[in-house]
Image (cartoon, rainbow over all chains, first blue to last red; front, top):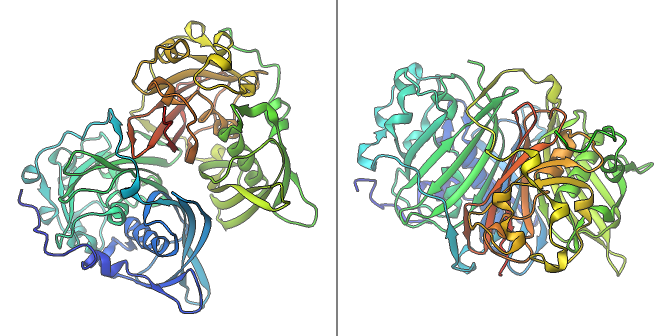
Length: 288
Length: 288
C-alpha cells in the first residue's frame, strides 16, 4: 500500500517529541510539558493528543506501561504552551495498576486552571493471555488508495467551520468517500465517519498513539449535516491489543443525538484485522 | 402488562432506602452509608448498586441532579456494611458540573481501603433541549410476558457459579429466552443478554436506578458458555434521558474477548422507546 513509509520510529517521531513529559525534580508524580501547536484543530488542542499526553505521564508514574481503560473529562479548553501534569497512583497490583492525572495551565491572572482530569487502569498488553474469541468484524471500507486524502479537502475557511487545521499536517488520514461528502456540502446524514489513519511521518501506532487515533477523525456531526464545534465532555478508551505496523482503519458512529448531546462510538482495527481500540465519547452537539 | 405494580414510589422504596447517604456533620462532601446485603450477587456487592450509591452521594454534593456521564473504577471488592464516601467538586458550571467520589471501607486491621473511585459529569436532564435525532432502534425481544422470570431460574448451587442471589429478590427481571439457555446448560454462544428490568417493589426507574440497571443482568460470559466470576474493572454510563414509567428493555452484548478481558456494551430503553442509557464496561473474563 502507498501509505507513508516508516521514516520515523516509535520513540523518535513528532508524536513522541510532542507528548514527551519531563519529571519535575523533587516533586514525584509531577511532569511538565509544552503542549505543541502542531495538534490544534480550529482553535483548540485536539482532545486525543491531550489524552496521549496524560497517558504518557501515567506510563511514567505507574508500574505498568499500557493504558487498558482510560477516561478523560475535558473541563476547560487547553491552549498550546506550558502545562503541568500531576499524577496519583490509586492502586498498584501485580497485573494491573490504577492511576489518576490532571493537566493544569496558568491563566492570565497567574492562577492554575485544571484542563482535563483522567482516571485509568494500566497493564502490560504484552503479558496478557493470547486467547481471542470475537464476533467483531472490521468496518467495510474502500482500500487506502481509494479513500480521500485530507490534502484534497477544502481549505478551512470554506469547510464546516473556519480555523486552523494544523493537526492534519501530522496525520496521514484518508476518509472513506461515503463519509466525506460533508466536505463538498453533501453529508450522508448517517452520522458515520470512517478512514485510514497513520501518522504523517510514518511512525507506526502503539498503545499511546491509539489514544490520539480514536479522536482524530472529523466529527460525525459533519456527516449529520451539522456545522460547528462538537466539544468532548468525556472520552473513554479501551486499548485491547498492541497494534501491528501500518495504518489503522478507524470507524466512528453516532446513533443518538438527544438533549443537545451525542455519543461518538469508535473502533480502531490494525493491519492484522484485530480490534485494537474501542472508545465512546459524550459531546455537545453543534447547534448548526 | 403484568409487571410489578407501582407499589413503591421513587424516594420511598428499597432502592432509595438502600442508597441513602448521610452527610457527616462538620465534614463537607463526606457521606456515610450502610451497604445493604440485599444487593449481593454470589459473594460481592453488585457493581451497579454501588455505582448508584456513589451517584447518590454526588447528587448531594453537586449543584446538578443527574449523572449524564459517570465512570467507575472498581479497585477492591466491597462488602455489605458501613462505608464512607468522600466527594470532591472538580468544576461547577452553569449547565454542568463535574465531581469525583471514592468509597472506602475499613479492613480487619482498622485501615481504610478504597473500594471504588468515580468521576462524573452532572446536569439537569429536565433542562436539556428537547431535540432528538436518532437512528438507534430498541432491541428486538419478546414481550414481558413471553420472557423468563428469574423465579424460574435454577438454584445458585446448580447455576454457573454457586453463591448468593439476594439481588434477584430486589429485581423484576425477565430474560429473553434466546439469551437464557445457559441456565439449563445450553448457552447460545453469541455473547448476548437481554431482558425486561423493573424493581421488585414496583418503583419506577429514574436516573439513579439506571446506574443499577446497566449492570444488573447476568454476565454475557454465561451466554458465551463460560462459567465463573466476571469482575468489572471499569464501567462508564451515559444517561441520555429521564426514563418513563414501566420496566426497561436492557440489552447487553459482548463482541470481543481478548487478552483475558471482555467488554460489555449495554443499552437501556424505556416504555416510550427512548434510549435512556448506554454503558460499556471492561471486565476480566472467566477462565472457565
